[in-house]
Image (cartoon, rainbow over all chains, first blue to last red; front, side, top):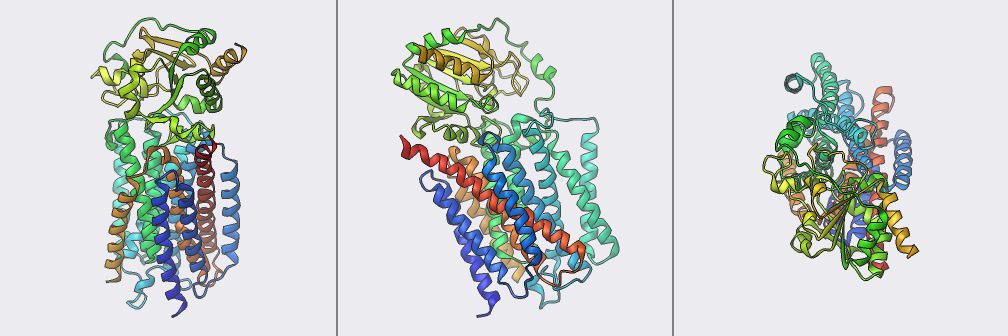
Length: 478
Length: 97
């Protein structure tokens, strides 16, 4: 058995380990082991590649050292609240890596440098076939879009860029032209990749794909980020998959498609949780036009009733069931630890405490769950939207922490609302509801929230962390 | 024929991916995403081949290869580590109280 057969068999083992790893990731009890299994698969794939005949290690070591150190330090230092932008960046590096693999293979092939790996399987048949060439183009295209798209997503999530959708007149025309350029470059390139025109168009395609990544991400606003991150996650997998077709490598194709499929599943779940189609998320520039959405029903009017931390304490002290509804604001205020502390005090006081998490609360799928887990909130106290809504009427106090659109009754009651039809947590049906908020500003969608004006709603203005701390101190002082 | 087999593998893997992931509960969505991010670092295999095979003398080829390896390594190392960190927190709660 020669060394390359061993390599291929090892790839098979690592593909199986990836599959088992992902399967185990889907249960809380086996998830930690699942991740380890998957990393073992990765180790096997890397070692199997390194023993490949004719490898030269000097530059590999440089690359692995740089990437390993950057990745390790970043992973150990990132706070849980920054997880969305962190994952966005990782999508980007994955895409860039696949893009560079495609680029590098084409470079080797075009300049006839060394034994290029493109079309390894077809070497006997005389070099790369048309699928390899198409794959080079796709790896560069998808990888490039993933890279710059993720950079924009990162900038928006990290607050380095305005999270409002960026729209300009003629945007559709520009995007259309980019699309035409992608197709024309691709057709010429694939027709004869060895022509000098093809090489030129290849570099045009590199630039165009990078521009395209920016163009498709800037019209998407902050609260739609869960969808975008999921989608970019899927792209990064598909880019790896394309790179696999470049070098006829099964383990790249299998793992790339697993990631691609997983990203698409998450994207679908996120879209469903907002009752919107993917096309609507990607192209509508949702939340950019306050005039259009606000004017719809004339907007709910009335006076919001404020409450002090002290009064909130008296109500909570008498409550026998309390549910927390966290949103992005809790992440911004880093309030998860003090929220858990309040939850414990309430429990000691005899109240039943739950945390209701909306599927799109926060800026990425599962964002709130990670934060609550970090703060050691017991697993049994986390409930999903569909489980809390049927019993919400028996809840004494619902405390909304930095969430807005996901508890906006307009989504349920007002068919003209911009977010009509989006499933919400019905906190307005609870006996009373506290909303922790910094100001009366409307949510991301730019839609007024009638919840604030309801009879049983009290507004606790201020930074969520400070407000909760004040209530906690009231409890301790009592 | 080789190519058709690869396409075959691709299509089956996509379906397998759908089956595997559609069962993940929403609490685990974030770790799932960072975990699958780590898996997409599998392009390190392509990057290793690109930068390790042949005589590495051409500066452009070297640059492309090294950046590709570095980016993919960020995904592999960072992705698995951060996923582990997150999942450890999920586990704490269950044993803890």
